[in-house]
Image (cartoon, rainbow, N blue to C red; front, top):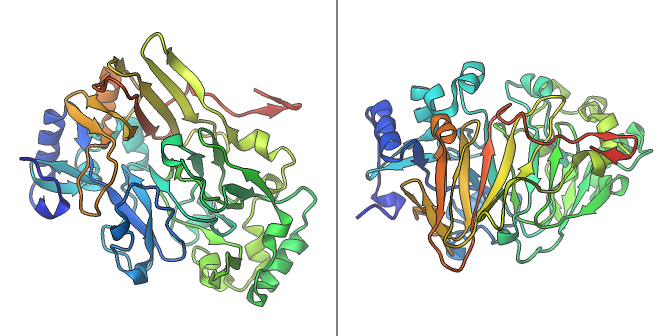
Length: 423
């Protein structure tokens, strides 16, 4: 019988290369991944990750509730008091587990593609489900240059709101983004001066957008955003840097330390420096929605063909395609072979079936230590050869989300707003 719990697995201490090669051969270029749970001490879980409610505080009450699940991750979470492997995905094979990061370190381009590995020497992206009961603070993620000042990497990110995880919108399904046009730097500086007076009022300078399941957003570095309470699929760069510019959220204090944690120590009280961390033109853009909002775009397939493959995350960040994502739906009893340009990480959000020889099943509830059959990493060679997805259900669609690394999909749509016309 295959293991059904992490507790039944042995953590591999020997030859990771040999184990990875064996797993790839058995999976025809696919790697089974275990769920990767992440807590956040300053947030309240939204309870839509399918995690057993009794396990919401499995890391301990002091660590906070589990409100994230990371996919295909070789990025360490930046939580205080974290476990050594927090945020890292594990490959599961024949009763053993080893980190996806270790597999990439050993086999490099054979897993993620030579172009990506030669440039980055790692899998430089990841995705997650992000799920909270209410909104989180108005915050930004540093640019590549800003993050380098503290030895980190910048973090552009994107959002898609899968309908399967959003039967309820929870307390605040709206997201504040950027600033209202006409906002001044002096006004923003004043909110930092007022930090310890209670609510520093930074949301008074912003607009909120209603969030719609089945849509998304592309958010560049240095743009303020206060994600609302929809469960969110987030393809993003492999970094966990941020600066929170809001002092009070739903009556909960946001420590100053969370504003400046990824800024040089000598700048932690330099209000002008902190304001200048923001991309001003992008934050006050009068066409913010037109330049960042994403609606799914069909790439190929139709109901008569038995499948539909849609772009759900697309566009460029300062001229670079850093990540992209698609949603594949296979109708009941149907089968399709999909060829992609590069490696991807797959999460099944509805139904049951197979990817090549691997079972796919979207579970109804997951225990903290449970192993699932809903997450798979697809190597570049397997993606280019074609992965066969089969829906073995006679009644329910099989739905998967998959994200890709940088510059993998040059044919993906772009977001361009010119003269009031979105192209």
